[in-house]
Amino acid sequence: MLIAVDHVQLAAPAGSEDLLRAFYGDVLGMTEIPKPPALAARGGCWFAAAGGAVQLHLGVEADFRPARKAHPGLRVTGILDYAARLERHGAELRWDDGLPGHRRFHTDDPVGNRLEFLEPVD
Image 1 (cartoon, rainbow, N blue to C red):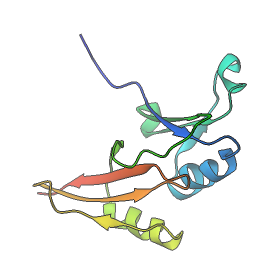
Image 2 (cartoon, helix red, strand yellow):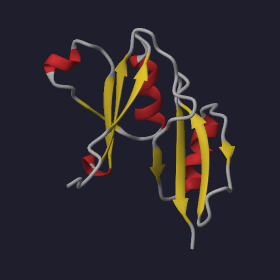
Image 3 (cartoon, rainbow, N blue to C red):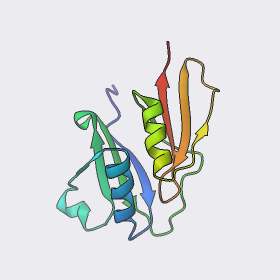
Image 4 (cartoon, one colour):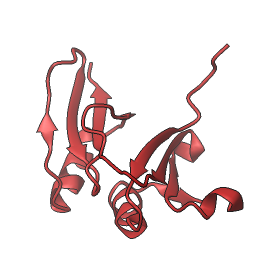
């Protein structure tokens, strides 16, 4: 029986950790969590939010290609605040009204991976 999604893994190019830390940590407000020593040697970085209930792992991929269609859907509160914060940091937002009952947009992380931010509306 599945009980939860433990984490979502996204790929990243080697040497992009500082860009990822600035985006996921500083811009999105996630907390970097330590990787186990055996995995830390591979590069990349892991982030958590909501007391660890939301985890994004970014792993180095030698032949990196950003995920353009596949993406995590990140449910937020205060989506307009997230949008404003991302725009202040130069992110391009692509608003989409195709999901009834939700306000949502897509953007890309600094290495080109697609991210979806969504908030249910009453």
